[in-house]
Image (tube, rainbow, N blue to C red; front, top):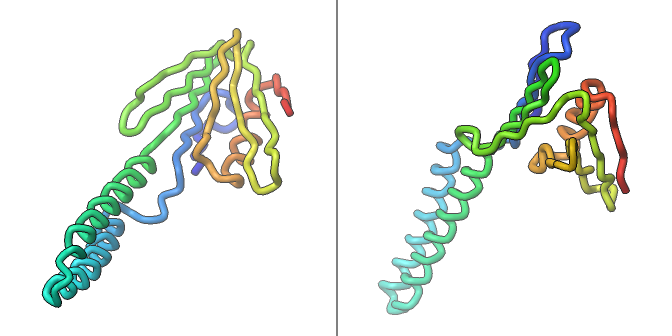
Length: 163
């Protein structure tokens, strides 16, 4: 998801990038609870029928599924904030708070686009200045990357398309 915050006719503002959140944390927990209930009910049924080896593997399945859902929900909290000021571009990356901050001089910033090898893949968008290069929005889908690319081309005058 791309959220653009610029004043009318201004080149100063910010762009917030974050993944699409198809399900909330509560919905994920409800889905997990449903799957756990069904899986453990079947495992307990087999356990009572005499197949005692099913229950530990069912528990391992529940633990692995819980870890996978938690990891996916945590990755959906990823955010990138690109702030444009008169002479500086700042990129902050993190989850709940900025974990890394990168500063670039706006005049020397170059937008580098690595075209996708396949039509279904998304192009890779990088910002480069003084030998430092940083990928932007690696988690975005194709439509959101094209929106980001359109706005960055308007804000940064120097664009380079790499193959």
